[in-house]
Amino acid sequence: MSSGRVQQIWETFVRSPEQLKEDAEIPLIIRDLTPGRRKYRMRHVVAVISRRPQTLSDGDTLWVRTTVGQNGLLAMTEAETSIPEISDFTGWWAFHARLRPDQLAVADSEMRLTWRQAALTAHRLSSALLALDLKAEDVVASWLPNWIESYVIRIACEQAGLAWLPIPASLREHEVRNILQRARPRVLFVAGPSGRMNFAEAVRQIRAQLPDLRHCIGVRLKEAGDFLLWDELFGHRHA
Image (cartoon, rainbow, N blue to C red; front, top):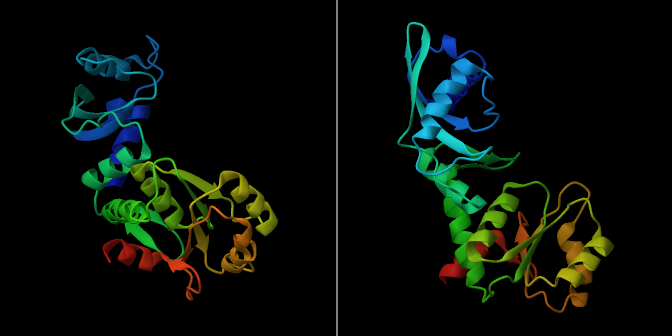
């Protein structure tokens, strides 16, 4: 069943469960369990929750299987694909990579990654960062527009136990310099030219004032110069 169809069934379940026409597995967000509110739907939800060994809190997500008849929803049981307890973004990426590997995960004007591709790229980047002799909780900064690479860096840092510092692309070099001097990152991901801004050149102007910065990695940068390029970083890991 497509994700779009699951969404349609879920919306029907939330608004008018008596209009459900087919059995399905849908994600259920546990919230607003006030007795007497939407009794028709909630009695099935409460029945599922009461059979669980652990307590569900407001906002938790549970996958359930709905069974319908001629008059709509008949019963609901917890699905085998129930979402596990996940406490970080890495866990969510891994979960979606297993559940919907070939569906679109992230996209921008130049790139698109499925969940499988996104999870694999983040894992490879995590390994590549550790190969740069970084220690736990070292700071990795990124000065990028809202590109796919920003999300991959965020997940990779979490996997590697590194602290990620995203710097808004709207800031200019004197503001970025002040941030970097305080945060003292070991690695900085820098965007190639975007619009009127030359991020790499701006970093070159301030790099001498950043003694803790060991590696500058160019993202979508055509000419490396004194930077390590994004694609080369993955090759560097396996060299």
